[in-house]
Image 1: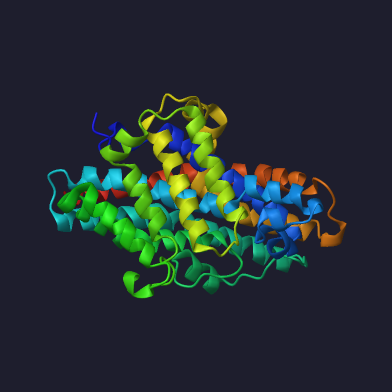
Image 2: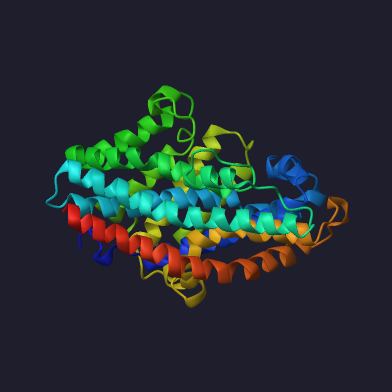
Length: 368
């Protein structure tokens, strides 16, 4: 089977990986929300330079690294959208492919963002109207600007990564056309050029949002190709964990702002994704298709957006001084956020995401 044309366009193991990545973001926020000082004292310092007392928290921040999880999201987007673009391009003109792709991306990203922002605004309004404190103020205007990715507020961090996904859309389209024109070599050249964007904004038309992350999207596209299948198609389950360990550890064993560490992290995580994509029978891939990862993968986008609302509610309900945080308190905080988020994410996936995706497909058929 040609790896560029999977049946149905769904990869169960990668859906599960996306779900587990979204879950890791919850616990990452749980650790740092009450103890923001850990960002500079532990998160951004190489492990070998830390005091022994900080190493347990460093390990937790490595295992539940939310920044690595977001990189995984971008790699997965590159892979899945490359497959989608190859299917769209089969027998279709370039302009129709571009119109359909932009429409589908908007229909995928915006409806859940809009419902989340309106929900966040409503909760903030009710909280304030009832005399509560501790919940961040959110105006309707700010919520709507945030929903349409025009102006990201500091009340909802995940919106920034969604904005980056949106900004990546024309670059992904360009990558698909380059691949159709020049094959794997063209896409590899785009990956190399994307590395220049790390220090040269002109490469990405002076769009700072995409500069640090274009390489991740392009690596995801490379992972979708037959050449990646040939390279990683015989990888063992142990190889998946080797790449995961390198991807998680790279930026925790070097200065956090190191460009070399970022490149190593992206490359390793892309290799892990390629292993899962092209060896679906490996035991890590099978584990990611189990009920819990599969469920989390299905609701992962809404979960990722709504989890912040749950965290705001918990912090407002249980204001705690950072100095009083002891031991594994963050685990209970993370579990509470998870339990509070899941029902709303299920509703959003069922009544917002699915209908918007169906409508985008109907529109796509009409312009065909």
